[in-house]
Image 1 (cartoon, rainbow, N blue to C red):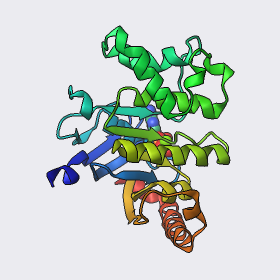
Image 2 (image 1 turned 30 degrees about the horizontal axis):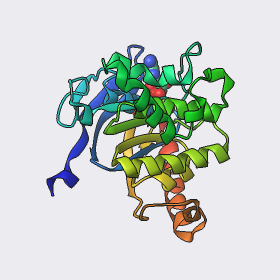
Image 3 (image 1 turned 90 degrees about the horizontal axis):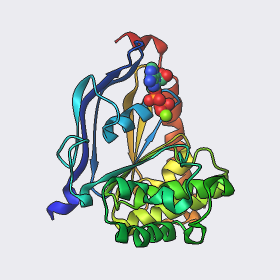
Image 4 (image 1 turned 180 degrees about the vertical axis):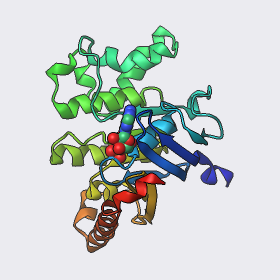
Length: 266
Ligand SMILES: Nc1ncnc2c1ncn2[C@@H]1O[C@H](COP(=O)(O)OP(=O)(O)O)[C@@H](O)[C@H]1O
Ligand SMILES: [Mg+2]
């Protein structure tokens, strides 16, 4: 079946030096297959956000290339091949209601007015917030605001979701809840996800594959397949298998964090 082996994102020799001279990424190669849940893990400053922004087409590369479904990330793709980005903070418009925030990407895409309300409602239902359509963002908790931001990403029905530490600012219980919801949606919609976190436990719980990065300059140093079958529930988190994965990632993260600073002059 060719479908199951399609490459969603292909990064080849991507390299980035910021204008101030920071070598954020040395040439990186990474392929994300359709339907994978890939997590980028690594110490602060190792280039996770830089790599994710390159995949989103939000940041030009110095060298190399990024392809999304075989085309440049900013190429016009049919709706079923679209991509959505979720940032660490919810980035909602504070003066607009929940449903106005969620409908914005549809309006920007020129979706007919009559289709807006039902699609916004579906997206909000997905994150359990459809009773809050008329609320302003600051009337909601941090976790609820993040859900609105996820609904805004889902409303366009993306095939690829790029998420940069989306739940990093939330308390642990809320984060676990949103992690579990995200997995449900990922499975139900057969999404391809690239997720950034610095939480080892979140990485093991969510991912089909974890890509470990190291800093100065940012690069990929290790990869781990998490073969635990889905659906995964929080029961997985108290198994010895989970602990083994977490230990492997922790050891790798320690190695990645201890990389000598002198390698920055490559
Ligand atoms: N706009 C920028 N200008 C200069 N340096 C930057 C910029 N953005 C990030 N960096 C630097 O590039 C490196 C990688 O950053 P980043 O991709 O944000 O890492 P991570 O997300 O893993 O913490 C860091 O050293 C960071 O300070
Ligand atoms: Mg970052």
